[in-house]
Image (cartoon, rainbow over all chains, first blue to last red; front, side):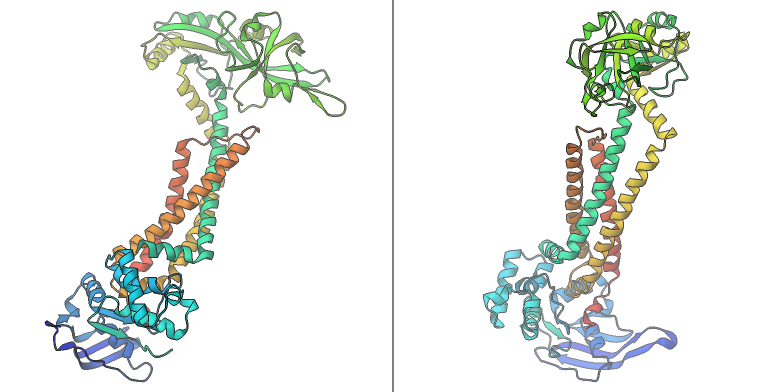
Length: 179
Length: 384
């Protein structure tokens, strides 16, 4: 992309503390991180080491306690909730550990959600969902299947397709290979 | 996202049906019990509805409701007639007289004595015979329900032979001949209704110094009824009420001095509580179950406004269907019991009342759910 900054994410002295007083838990203790645009970066660490907290802050879902987090030249700390919500929807795609597919929606409908949230027409959104699901190897039967009728791997592919359907600049995946 | 909201709602079949059943039950109970209540209340002034010609009812000032008879002197009729703005004024007797049956049993009858010359105040609908037949000696007209039931002759095997035109009866030791069968609105009293002329009624009635129950008045065209009422009250010292005012006074008496509103009010409140408990709780639980998905939508960029509109839409759908089913079943109930003694009246205001109650239940549960969703941290989506 022409205007794509070279650095997608830049975190400086990023801190996040849960709770206050003696019960406070310091999940992030001054993280410095740079993620170049167009690169795949993996954060590896033991359970409870703060990986999910880090990507939550990067994705604008959690507010940091201290430090800065710049995502595509946008300082998330200065954004209000509404701006952050809009930013997330436009810029970030998510793959959740538990996939969070809605059981009452078909694979195509689940995949179309990011487009529908931003007001896409139903037929257009479903059409795009069908196309991207086909790209991840789904046939028509699977496209119209409900999550509970799909295997873990197939559900994972739906989650990935959903994260990519609106062409986000950053995809945040939380333990995507756990299943 | 509207379609997504609908699919999320309908897809969870068990909860969806649970919410609908709760709302239907609440709507049914609220509508049906209120309709019976309104029906009973409307029966209290059924006689006023049947006697449509007079604009104004004149009575003793202490009369509290239609069946509270405090007789006036016959001369009061002439005093009322002398008041300016009155087109006509006729006497009306209303009282209870015992009828002696063939079997030897006694049956108290609600006797209406109407003006001999004009027959104003007669039954609204004649099924057999004619109103003018009341001028025949000893003639009376009885209502169909009374004729078939309480005035019927009971054979030894229990079979009831309805009283018919030509039959005789004894009213306070006076011979009476049935010359007609009429249909009247069921009143709060269950006694058979017997129409006769005013003179005959006052002859049949147990001897009292005063026997005039009401004076029915028609105002001249263009006269303000309230002004005429005031004039009558001022000149005669009697109470004069328009038909609507008399209806209101009657209903007010029953509301104030009987336990009817409390009993039915309890049923309506019960319906509301049951509806709130079942439907409200299930809807809230449905939202809680979907909280993770609302969190997912939030993480993906859905605004609170969008999520609220989804919850409101879901609430509207279950509310509308539940309300429709409840009111529909209540209407069906009313239709099926139309020819029975059950009083059932469902005016449009009642449907609005029921709708308001359902809106309150749905709105309340939606509000609680909305509060939960607004407070929801999208970080919930990363919790496995």
